[in-house]
Amino acid sequence: MTRFKQLTILTASVFCLGILFPACGAETNSEEKAISVSEVPQTLRSKVEKAVPGIRFTGAETEKYQNEKAYELQGYAGNHWHEILISPNGKILRAQVEDEDDEWEGKEIKLSQMPPAVRKAAEKAVPGIKLSAAETASGIYELEGCANGFDYEIKTTGNGDILQIIKEKRGFFRRLFDALF
Picture 1: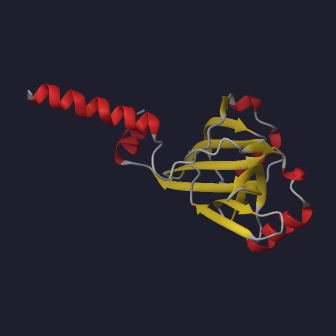
Picture 2: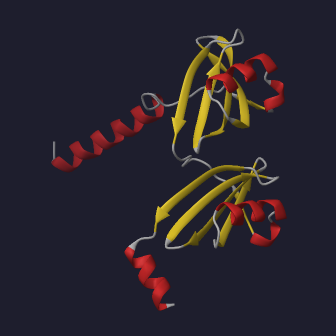
């Protein structure tokens, strides 16, 4: 068998296995259902608020966990994104914390479409910020801008409560571009 045929058979086999068997650890739970935070019993929300002080909920889901119903609450606390899975009897089953929510995808909007409270909160949180872009999803706004040689990404609620601020030093080429133009 020629090397080309071997490579073709190997590639086709790997492709077929990828279709038949999802990647290890991938979530394939088709029983997840988005719900409003208010649909999660107050006792469970209070338990999560006690476990994660200062959390501001932004979403919730129901899902199956070991063949039992469970609730997943998502939100921000202390500049971190949290996902907490809790059973109906109040046992925390899983807690994930991330510095950034890279999977967040909002709908791009014009800066003029932001509620005034959102702009005001961002300008108060980062004095001198020059806003350049905005997105929104599920009542959350993500703003991008720069101030004092840093790039900022700010997430707020629709009424201007700050959920997260990410501050990054601007790269060399970005600083050079800004200096030239």
